[in-house]
Length: 283
Image 1: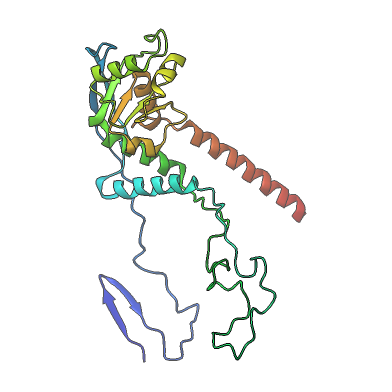
Image 2: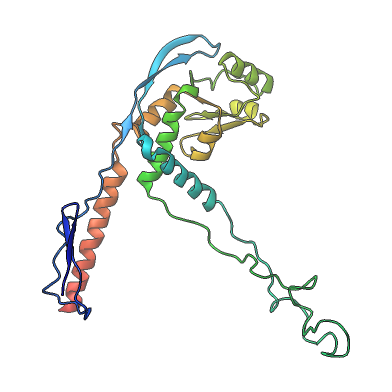
């Protein structure tokens, strides 16, 4: 005897008592679950441009894609965990009781000693013995989609807009390496040298690099070394107008993903070539 019930306009029937499944009696689900579309948000922000002396000389805008508030935390968390885990070398190794040197001889007779019986000195209960469930070399790397990682970076940058400072290109302002001059310039821009700061420059002059390398709270990055950890770890983000244009072009709302189109075309070509080879083998 069969019984049926309905739940939210989706009906389903129980199988018979014999638990036999007939292909003709199985019907498709009348209420398929469609995946939710990916929604992105953006917020246009205007940032003042400061000169090397700290005076405002203009304005620029930054308009980056960001994940909706309901999923932003999860996207950024997954990306930062991926970055940190992929940095692990995975070379930690311990010796088990089978790998420890020695232990071939029974240390003392089984009986008439008054002590607990012991068959080997490599037991994990003794100092110098093997390790139980210790670490072994392994690969800690995990994969993340390219679009998801880019969305995490753009979301982190969007959340740090209030801490951004845009400064004119100052690569030619330092005649010689001088850390004190660089810290003075940071104070003029409203950046405390004691706070953690991240500088994103398109090109780093040698004098700028040498003047800033002794500041332990400062990270000097370029578009190639931009990463999510330094963005989240910094209290202040100092950019140049060229870096702002790069961010708008790479992570902005109107960013054109040329790499994706090239990758799709290459994959299509490889797929067609593989199909042709399979057809020849079948013939």
